[in-house]
Length: 190
View 1: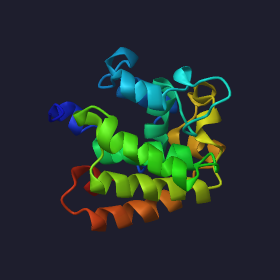
View 2: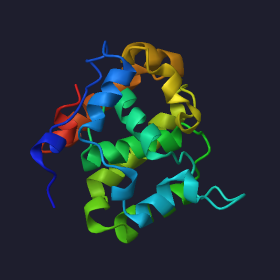
View 3: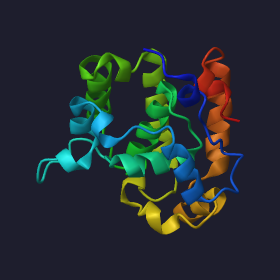
């Protein structure tokens, strides 16, 4: 199932960094899914509301609002490769993701998620790269940030406050662009 063009084309790239985080979030909400639109299987894996007490199956789980803020701060749209990157970077930023956890998450997204949410080989590669980038980044663990307190800041200021290294993202996005020349999500990042 293809996304409608306004959604498929939506992105606020890294270079567009003078918009406030709050304004960017409001802009994104025009195309964003609502929590009730997300299939239960995806929510069970990715939403911390469904965590069992004392069991943190996947590090970096966030609610949908925080997830949307992370898209904005990482300069990603909402296509499959964008989702893979946002999820991987968020998990990696916790500095606690094991290889087993990465493999288990990949299994869920490749085989158990509803078809429209499944990752293909390229998406999985981007997810794994993003886990590593999040790990080496000196940013705060993104699953712990209270983004609403940053909404008055520009995207550039919010990235700086959290410690997101724009140069690191730009370097990876240039690599991603070369690796996936036919992928719209990868071609529009810079």
